Amino acid sequence: MTDIILCGCGGKMGLAVRELVSSRDDCRIVAGVDLNHEILSLDFPVYPALQDFLGEAQVIVDFSHPSALSSILSYCETHSGCAAVLCTTGYSEEQVEEIKKESRILPLFYSRNMSLGINLLIELARKAERVLGSAFDVEILEMHHNQKIDAPSGTALMIAGALNEERESGFKYIYDRHSQRKKRERNEIGIHSVRGGTIVGEHQVIFAGNHETITLSHSAQSKELFASGALNAALFMDGKAPGLYDMSHLI
Image (cartoon, rainbow, N blue to C red; front, side, top):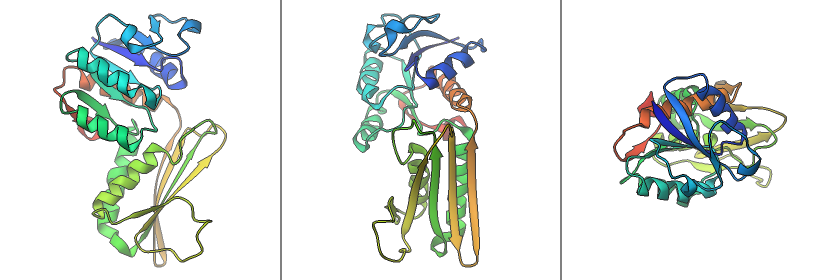
């Protein structure tokens, strides 16, 4: 049995994780953390801050806010063996570097997208980039619901980062074309965001060449798939040694 602390337990993803845990017998939520703790009535105690929980857990699952990162890392440092599954999007470059640094002494699982399908899409995009090379222009389109704050999505940046690795950091990211009056350069990778309605998450990677276009796409139809990925990551991280883990290790 894996004991979990759920940060952001009152949010939409927190709800999805709670519902999924209730149907499983290999894990349980022993505590939650949420700023709205006073109005939440759940079957586990909820605290305003992680450090207020005095019990023990094997893994922290975080679907809260980037500002909670420091407190999560601090908690793991003072609770030996406690791992963290970092599912929050919108981390700054400095925070990502902090995660990498702390993974030298802490077991941390970090992925900008917890979907198995998205991570398969990324591997396929890597393969396409290796085969097609600079003869094809690459564009990334991501679409999400109208409540999403960050743009472009962390997943879009994750896809772009993987392609940039294949190109040996040769890509230049372009987020806004309407302000430019010039032809597209060969080393550009366009990243475009759409926000509307209740779209859970859509990502397309477009490879446009001479007289042919190849499109790889993934459509998320429920938040449950992200909750499932997070819980599988939590079980995977139970008892893991310090290091930085991601979906490729889980796959």
